[in-house]
Structure formats: structure tokens, C-alpha cells
Length: 64
Length: 334
Image (cartoon, rainbow over all chains, first blue to last red; front, top):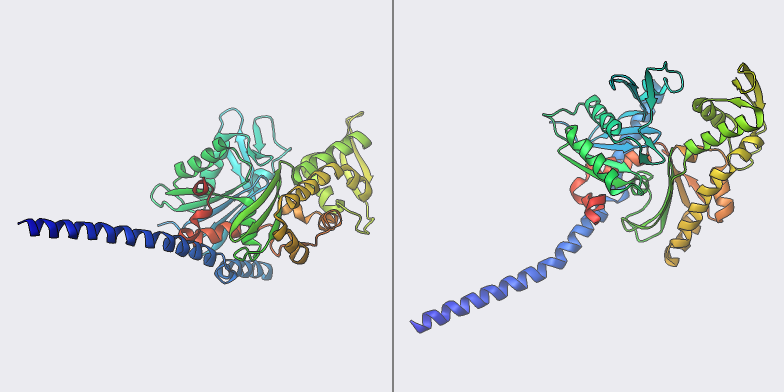
């Protein structure tokens, strides 16, 4: 009985530790990933579509 | 399902970008109302044509002045009408990103977002005009280099230093191209004794206005009302006169650019010498302005390829990449 309780306690402690390690390792990764995503979305390649769309519409309008 | 929208709510013009489509509306920020009933009679270009030419019961107004909202209720009605015109209703609830001057107050921010939500937007976010302008001017703001953008609008002039997708330094003055028009009106009244309207003043600015000598000495014929006799009168104006008339306004814009340069960290400041500064906004089209800023700041000044659309293009890009760029919205950073 005692062994079972000890095993459960160990499993709980390991679980909590694993969760802490996991969440700590995730936090900076999330920051890095979201900053990367933010910067990538501002790259000239990402912006090309919007600028081309408006430029084309402008040229089509001038041609009319 | 309505497509998401980006709105450049400018003092002079309002532009709307629709996700996946491009610019779907570009009209003056003017609304004409019946003074007695408060009913909206016209908006945009139609209302602009009424400025200074209305009978007593009609009033054509710009709800934004000096980059600030002068009348919340009228601004709200204008936003609602704009959204209706591009297909927003209670059943089609798009996300909306609105560009506003960086200097607007908390109360004004809330008024703009509330107006957009009441008009049918599912979510309304604000973005600072110089940030949107830098995105729309196609500057490499994703890199760790100094990008400087000068946005001269109808009521405000904002200069920002941007690096790695964020604002590093910002300087804004509540002075813009409408102040240039007002300075021309005052000069003509004072020196020639004739009264002219704001549209005539704008025409003079476009015809012969300049911020620095540009080697063009063609004069402009101006018609107005003689202040002494009350009769129509014509006078000839020279470019030097207009340059003198608008010098105070131009000087205050240039001074704000200098202040922003002084705020920039030294590592970024050296980038400006190589990359230059970029002019956007309708006020940036004033002849000789780039030359004047360049002369006084000793930094090259370049004109953005689409100066009038740069701000809405930047906001349009934010609506296209809403999730990745939501950290740039004004509420997100506080």
C-alpha cells in the first residue's frame, strides 16, 4: 500500500516537473516564433502582393 | 461574409482597402448635413464640392481637423456611411484596421473603434499612420536598419524612425497641408485685400506653391472678393509670395523632422545618410519640400512611389496578415 502511495507521489512529482520543464522550454520558443512570424509578414516578399495589386489597379485605371 | 477592411481615416481624404481586392474607395473626408434636421445630405467628393458654396441650411464639414476628431457624432456617422458604401451591414461583420494619427487621445481612439463596431465591424483595431506609411512605402522595416518616414497629411505631419517592425522614434506636429492653404488665404487677405476660399487657396498651392526655390517663376491669376468694395477682383500672385506666405508652416514641419532625427539612436542615424528619408502623404507633394528638408537636415529625401496610398496600403497589408501583425495595433502594445 505504502509502495503504491510512494509510486503515485513520485509519478505526480515527475509529472509536475515535466510540465514545468515543458512550459519553460516553450515560452522563449513562442516568443521567437511569433517575432519571426511578425518579421516575415513585413518582408518585401510578403508585401509584394498588396503593392502589386494596387499598382496594377492604378495602371489599369490610367489606361482607361 | 464581408471581406475585412483597412481604412485610412485622414483629415483630407479617406481611403478604404478591401482584403483580396485592393483600394475600393478614395474620397475626401467631408460630410454635408442639413443644419436644421441633422440629416446627412452627401459624403465624400459630392460633399467636398459643396464646401464654401452651400445655402444657409446646409453645412459641409470635415469631421477631422489637425489630426483630431472635432465632432465625434459626425465622425461616427461618416465611418458608418463609408462602411455601408463598401458593403458592410449588421449581417456581414468584417474585421477593420483603421489608421489614425499617432497623437490622438485615448478618448478619440475609443470613439473611432466604437464607431466602427457600431457600424458593423466584428473587430476594430487602430494602427499609427507613420507605421502604416512605412509598410506601404515598401521600406525594409523587417531589417535591423533605420528607416525614416515623413508622413505629411492634411492636418498632421508625423516623422518616424522604424526598425525591426517597430517604431524607434516618433515626432508629430498638428500642422499639415490645410495649414498651408490657410496661410495662403491669410496672406492674400492681408497683402492683396481679397478674400478667397479654402479650395482656391489649395488651387494656388498646387499651381505655384513651393517650399524652396525650384526655378519656376510662372504667376497665378487669383479671383476673390475685394474686402473694401465687396466686388469680385483678380490679382496676380508670384511663387516667391506663396513661398513667403507658407514659410512658417513649412519651417515647423522641417523642425519636427529635425527633432525626430535627434531622437534616433546613433546606430540607426548613420543609416539615414545612406538610405535617406521617405516622404509620403499629400502634403509631401508640395514642390521643393523634399529639397528643403534635404537642405536643412543634410540627409537625402526620396518620394515614396505611391505617396497618397502608402498609409492605406500599409494598413491593407496588416489586414491581409492580421494574425501575424496584430502586435502592431495600438491597443496591443499597451
